[in-house]
Length: 192
Image (cartoon, rainbow, N blue to C red; front, side):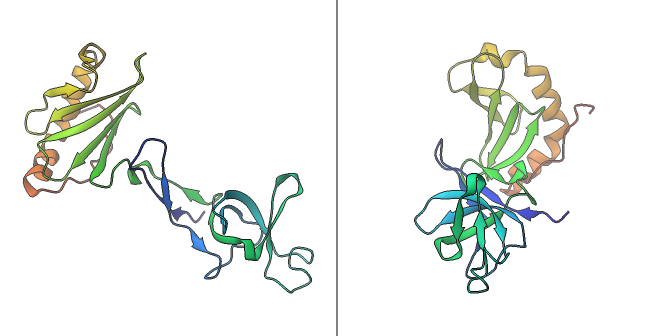
């Protein structure tokens, strides 16, 4: 299966910008390709590209997008499209702020971000009963510096996991810190 690379950028909570769409004027979807669609009026929609006789108005237009419940989006009402059946968004390319790079995910509950040349890592923990907790780790020591809500108790039980992760990744973290450019870290399985 061919996959398409799509970037998702978020600078504000609740807002995500997707990059990777094709302009309809430049390229048409494959027959029966299911797509996320940006309409010319700014609406976001979805549909299946169809080039059949009824969808092309007997060859007068290249095709149209068929939608659920019998809806049709005509070719000239579409600005851009993104094939969604063949698209995978790799979490490593999901940015919450372009200045910060997602460098690691620990057990699907701790997301680690780094800003080049910063002395600390920003970590987001999702779990427990407190929702999302943001805290920082010193790049040079691996010590937890602070949390956004002083939720040290919530982070306390993660200390051994965070210490093991830091010890395994320390060399690469320090290399990124000294070079002024952090890189995506290898997947961590907790085995050392």
